Image 1 (cartoon, rainbow over the protein chains, first blue to last red):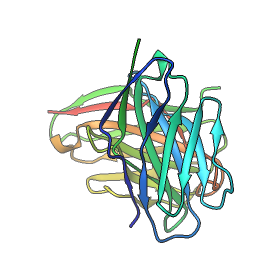
Image 2 (cartoon, rainbow over the protein chains, first blue to last red):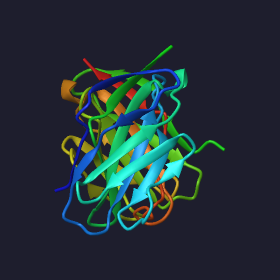
Image 3 (cartoon, chains in turn blue, brown):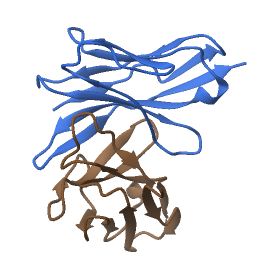
Image 4 (tube, each protein chain N blue to C red):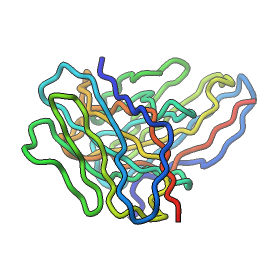
Length: 116
Length: 116
């Protein structure tokens, strides 16, 4: 079974600084995908970024980038120039192959608080 | 564009009562999912439907049943509610059968369910 580990229950970062949220995964599959989602206090789940196991380069989406280290099985999310609106829960998730199709396995999440 | 719509948003039940949570998507997605979110545990998959006519168990299916009514709608039923089922329930959908490799799941706003 695949597993996602997010070791930081909570993080603080100063506004305008960069922050890294850790995610390690465990899989024996060669082909897999990793997703990051943001959940603000309002509760909705917002897709941020995706990294495929065969992607040559680290994924980037605006201020979000993914530090993908395949040999170490880590897929850390880097948020540059933090903003107050980045305060939220962040989930790392991995695509897992089910009997009839793909599904996601989520980590427990990291709460990020941005200080002004 | 409504995306994924869940009803109701809030519900309080007594132990032993039954209830159906409704989910509909208007993005012509093939795959739909039901998750529950509990504090400190991230999102856990209850059931999913990779395409019309198929459903499969996820990580925590006990006490739940699902129906893929048509391509748009995927309902979750609690036959005899228990306090352990108090949680926030999310429905999600993705585009291709099982979700293509880089296609994110799109989430509804959640249903907050309390069982007394």
